[in-house]
Length: 91
Image 1: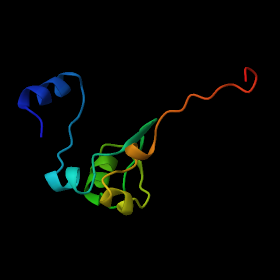
Image 2: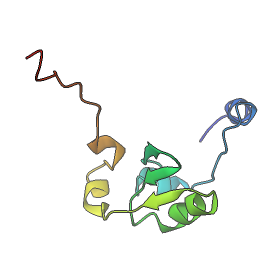
Image 3: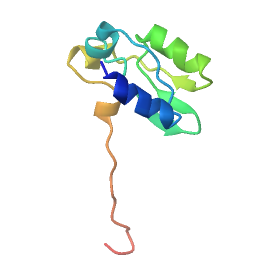
């Protein structure tokens, strides 16, 4: 749920907004996706309508089964984080 001024700002930046329902966003964690780059995203399999919209936008959607994680209040983006590893040469 975004204010119209925020939506306008996104549009001015060339960011496309895809409409999702409150249930899709909150209960199903449907907005919790992971961008992999090169027009690829990871999105929960149970977000079938959202995944169809993403594919219609030309994105390649990898859709693993994540409904048990969503029931716990998380999803793919919550399950990932950047790691900085120390080089073996400097260890």
